[in-house]
Length: 94
View 1 (cartoon, rainbow, N blue to C red):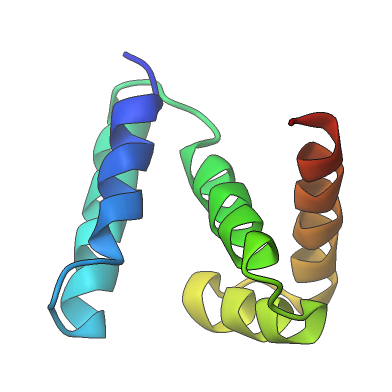
View 2 (cartoon, rainbow, N blue to C red):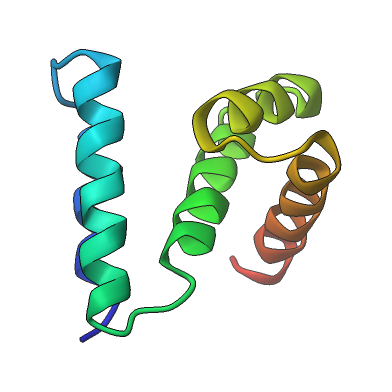
C-alpha cells in the first residue's frame, strides 16, 4: 500500500468544516492505520507537505515553526530541521 492516498486524505482534512479536536483525532487514526499496513514515514511526509504548502504561501519560518510545534508536538529544533528539509525539496522540484 502506498502513502499517497493517505496523504491526500490528510491534506483534504484541512478543508473540512470540523473542530480541530476531531481533525486531529482523524489524522491520528489515519496515521495508525497506515502504520499497521506498513507505511513508514507517513507522518513525516505529511509534515513536509504541510510545510511546503505554508512556504508556497510565504508564511514566515517562525510562524511555520510555531504551527509545527502546536500541530505535531515536535521540538523547536526538530521543527527547524523539517523546515530546512522542506525548503531543500522545494528547490529541487519545479
